[in-house]
Image 1 (spheres, rainbow over the protein chains, first blue to last red):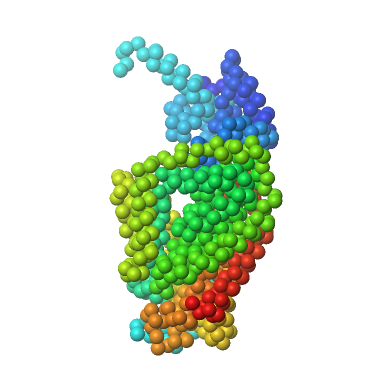
Image 2: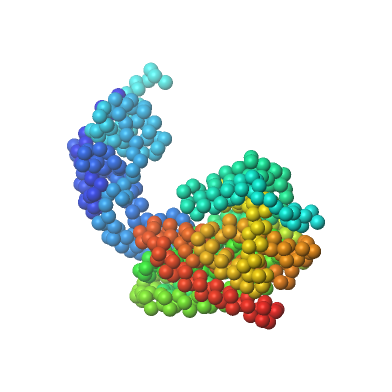
Length: 161
Length: 455
């Protein structure tokens, strides 16, 4: 099995100049496959269709987390409404500012093991799949890889150990 | 007379002189330009001094006059280790939150209390460490009170540079001066702490004038601060007690190191070793890796570069120029040193500056009192005001610009991350007047105490 066999064809994506408000709206309503609604991350493509980043739930969490809290243990000294207030203030920030820029992609012909390799070593849950020209054609989700693995496990009739 | 003999040798402006001078000037120019990391320049410059045989390795490593001042190096490393071990206990978070609550949520009151806390911490720790510990809480408090964080950030840098001036261990220039002039911890307490206290009082009035009226908040936001429970900050009470015990041992050691004939580095190294032992950590790698090695290597490289120009006689030549300028009048010399140091430190890192000035002051002393040596020379009553002027100028001068001190650079970096960058000019607009005010106070102090009252 290869990346292209398990990936879901690219339907929705973001632009770097989208606001976070637009982005989270899309994250909440984007379709993944036929019936599943809502995604935890979307690729960010520029106007030429080139992949420039990924915006995931974690990036959104980081938006509301002030950098100074990474420097010291200050979690005990925060107040109710702090997250919501920063979230409101950040809603007009651009996707380009907060997206993760180092994106690992796989070729559509990549083996499933190569995909698992990336997912484990770089702790990523969704991989953009690119064609020969470097264009993003789909997304490979950890969940779908997981289903491929479980399928193989369940198919074991007992002669393989 | 081995010490004096080298310095009294008439020097010639030969190839070695010009080579060493070129390396020295190029290194300093590159450090100012910030094109290459200063530590890399220092290490490479030191390597050049050795490879080109300006200095022999033996001189660079083992002769105090020309090489690395291990007293400074081990004092710095040991204090860093102690602070690194203390940090995870949460004591600094506790202190900062406690201060904010003490300020009752009043924006200016908090600013003034933070300034004092920062100054006191800086007097006993590296300024950069202090700023890194105080600014995150400062930003949190500013967010809680919904006030502009910039004044708090600038004030944090300024007060850390002022506070660092107060003690031997407060700021690297003082550590270097103490080591060269063989001054002890209590000398600094006796001679510098009083004027720093006066400067802090004026500083608080100054920030009241600058920011006092602008900082306003609402009652319900103050409640956010008052609702914080500083006790939650303490993560490891046992380690905290051990740390405070060792800190007490180290501070007592500093107070008596002169009487007991210990170098400050001995006290600090003993403290670091004791706390490492008491902490019961199995693998010290992590704690030791957190030592700011780039700073340590910057020092080592600079000592060797300066050693090179000391050996070829450049520093001696410079010292004669200064004495010519002031015609041997010691008050005039002190004032020139203080004011020049202040402006120089506002532009150049005060570490390389003082590394250069220390041997210059000693050469000056040798020129003035050729028959004296050792402590009689280094601590000649007429020379003492010069050391204090150098310390005051070099430490306080750091406030003059955004690049004058590492603490300022950190604060500017933090403001940028917080989304509101302090420009070079903006920092100077606050820093320069504060610097001038503090040097004016120091001028009055040095004149009154050492030339008028002579105490």
